Length: 201
Image (cartoon, rainbow, N blue to C red):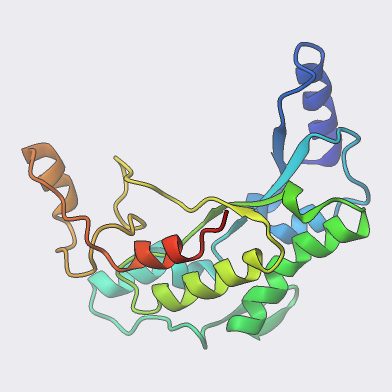
C-alpha cells in the first residue's frame, strides 16, 4: 500500500479513534524494501510499520514443499540463490540480515524507534530440512534491534505447513484427516522451541 493511501486510511481512523496504534505495511507483499522506498514516514506517531519475511520464497514456502512431496532435490539454506534487486544473490545469514536491516535502516533514517517496527509475518515450511536454521537467522536479525515479530502461524485450521508444534515426522497429508476425525494432533515439534527460545520480555 502506498504512503498516500495509508495517509488517507489513517486520517479516517483518527477521526473516530485517536489512541489505538495502527500497523501499516508497504506494498510488494509487505517486502521491507517496499517500506524503505517511502521517502518519509506517516505523520501519526502511533503508527507501527510492518513487513513480511519469507525470502527466498521458492525455498521457504509452497514451491519447495512441492519438491518434498515429489521426492525431488529441495532448495537448501544456506546456499539457495534467487534474483534480488536486479542481481543473483546467495541466501545465507548475511543476506537474510541485510534484507531485514532494510526496514530498520529506514526507521533509523527517519528517527523512528525500532520498537515501532514489526516483522508481522515470517516462516518456512516445517518439513523443510533447513527450516530451523532459517528461523534462527531471521529471528536473530530482528531481535538484534529489539523489534517485534509474529510468526505465521499458530495452530492454523487451514494450512499445516507452518504449524511448528507439529513434528516433522508427522505424515504429510494426515493433518486434515486428523482434524476431521477428531484425532489428537501431536504437538511435540522441535521448531516451536526455536521460536520460544527467541522470545524476550
